[in-house]
Every structure is written in structure tokens, then in C-alpha cells.
Length: 109
Figure (tube, rainbow, N blue to C red):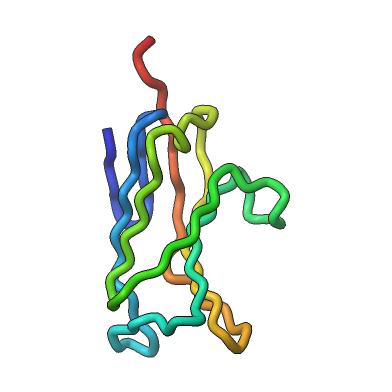
């Protein structure tokens, strides 16, 4: 089961997660450039790269980002995680597009 409330996501362990986000920069729709790197990361804490539980990169052709995380990748331990989606531009500038909590709940055995 997938529930999205604001920026917070609740997902049953082992389910597919599809997250769609409209991109804006300075209040206007933003279409990523070819050199932009877009990634979704999920970890137990906001500190450092070492603790990532999930990390996916994506490229998109317009101002709407859709990231799909397969069911096999969401078989992480139940609990609360932090996630964010960032765009790293060619000049090294990083923009956080969205951030929030990802809660992984149990699945029937």
C-alpha cells in the first residue's frame, strides 16, 4: 500500500514506489538540462552518504520527474527514513526538489 500525505510517504515493504514531482526553479517550471544529475536518496539520518538505504538516479525530458523504485529495492527494514530528491547542475550547484519522511511498514508473511 502506498500513501502520500504532503511530502511524507508510507509504503508497505516490498511494494513498488512511484514518485512524481513537478520541478520548479525560481517559481517557474524547470526542464533539466542534459548535464543535470537527478537522484533520490533515502537513509535513516540526514548525515553523510554512508548510510543510504536506497539511491536512484533519473533523467527526465520535461518538468515532471517520475522515479520508480522496484519492489525488490524496497525490501529494506521496516521503520522511518528520510528521503530527498536533488538535482546537481553542471556547475556543481545542488537544488533539493523535495524531501520528507518515508515509512516502510510490514508485509504479511
